[in-house]
Length: 118
Length: 400
Image (tube, rainbow over all chains, first blue to last red; front, side, top):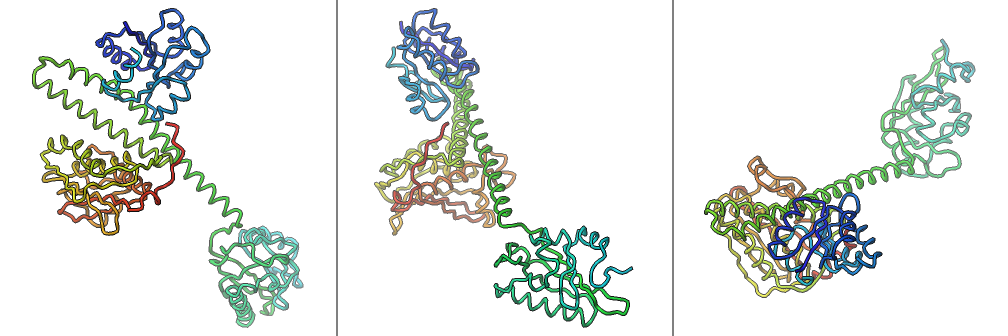
């Protein structure tokens, strides 16, 4: 079964996206900031993809990605930037991410974005 | 009490004279030699006391500038009148120039001043001195000071504008987050609605519709913040305006019909390929249609595509709304301006037309408005034929 880690400081988004993806048959983990996500990743099987918010209190999405890329065990986990910022392509490039999705989005857009990683 | 003795002011009176808040100097009636000058006069004229006291009054005055030399002649006449009549006299002030300057350092602001010449009489009633006072006008500034003030004012205005733009941008981003979960929840409920009662399905549809409207308003705010912040990037590609008109009309059909309005498009030219920014063009048309729907209680909204004789393309959005009286036709393009209490009660945030005008300008085009009270309005997006040449070059995309 494919799995996904949702990193977002907004509880409603974590809940809602989790529900949608569980209904799609994915195994879902969530974290409310980058630090929590790194601890989770270090102690569990790597997910198929990470859905990464950028602006978060504590460890931001940018910081999460920087640390992730320095840890060999985590570096290869693909990341989808999931942010309300418009400059998705630039953020994706800056973060060496595998894709981006701009908030708000439809369910179809969400599913299409994660489809390549399932 | 005698102000002067032997043409020279006594030290205590000179000190008083110098400390006077009036912009004044005193000179002898005999040979017009300046005997005292106030600090206020020196500040106002940017002269040094050493440059003034002991010199003849007319040595201070520039005659290089013909406009000013008239004033020097007028001052000379004034002084003659004072000596003759022993009565005060006023004339427009001349320009005062220190020895080493060929041009007055007063930067023209002295032109609003009046010079008042008041005679000082001795015991026998003879005019021995004249006190020459500058009145009126603002405290003059040097060119440098004026420049610094202008720069400071501009920086302050820019800072305020940037703060406003950043605030708009931040608020819009923040709003996108709850909107994301709201839209996703509604969409999921609609997908899983199954055998929900009809009235709940209708409610869901209305919630979805409101969320979509909110999303558009947030996008408008963000677009406005980007344009105001100079962060909009114009991406020119060839595309068919027919597609843009059909797409935007279809997008608004549901809302128009929901409000009991007929909405139709009229393609008087097809295809209508232009070189412009498709996303921005559609944003403009969409905002014009949205505006027309919002302010039209009954009747129709019509979107007509045409090409003018000069090759420019015109997308005209005509409504059967209340119309806009002539005095307000410029005002409605200002940010946050809406007309009348009826309009303020409606959902718009009053940025649509300001945004539309700025985007049209960024695309090298313009918005034309034709309207008469009680006869509806037509807002027309005009895209010039040589659009690619006139569009603003692409700017650095903003950090969102």
